Image 1: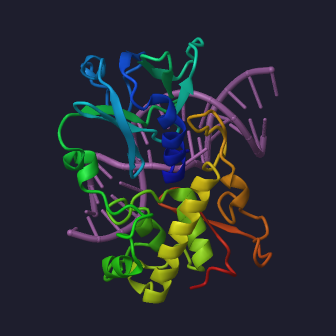
Image 2: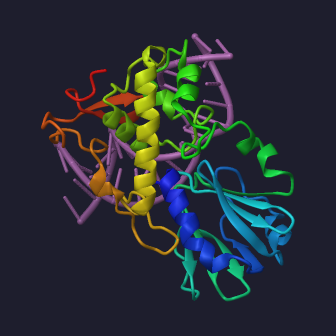
Image 3: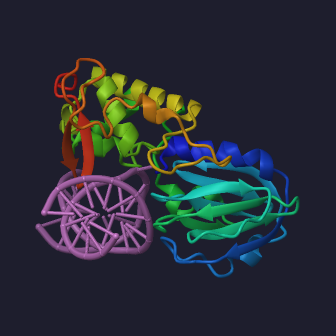
Length: 272
DNA sequence: AACGGCACCTGGTCGC
DNA sequence: TGCGACCAGGTGCCGT
């Protein structure tokens, strides 16, 4: 569910409720996430004040006085702000209780997410250190993408979803950015022109920014920190629209497989 | 090194 | 209604 816009939506949703609060207790009901939640994590973060929230790639970072909580939502995770304490559901694996009575509740049916804590500089953390630039910053330019793409043979869709190249472009937004750019998703990366890189970079930025402004994409069950769904789904041009008419030319949207993931494109609009 | 494919896990949907 | 097959927003790791 969560790509960059969904993580950013979550961060913005929870921040006002948790900033400058002290963590009074952490409850881990099920530690079996992608990596086991470290058994020492609850006591390490307990009594620490929350100084800020950040997002790097699809990681939600909660800055504490002495270290950083690293939260990843995986494919099916969500974090919600609760003002009371309803009975935890089946997949409510972690609660962060704050000194103002607010509670952050982490739900993740598939358990592909992660909760980790580090006191080392965050940029040196193994999960963060090798990441490419943020797509919404000036570090991500057409020039950068063009240079990186030379002599690469992989498909362009795979390339822009590679977090070492640029972070935060997941399956939905990769499909959408390629549509907007008129590029065939299986085009070999090395044959993408400079002009096409300009289009691609511009459209990746646009589609992510628009999705953030709409509160992310809710396909099944995504909700932001405030429990509200995202509205970007209605802006989707190709993702999940196999057999439906292209919004631009009416040609029926087709589906490919790209290493076992759905790839959606318009055969008329994406011929480059 | 770069590439493609698979696995991790649960739940929803679809066809029979 | 029940059952099995298949699919899903991410990403680390494996073999080639």
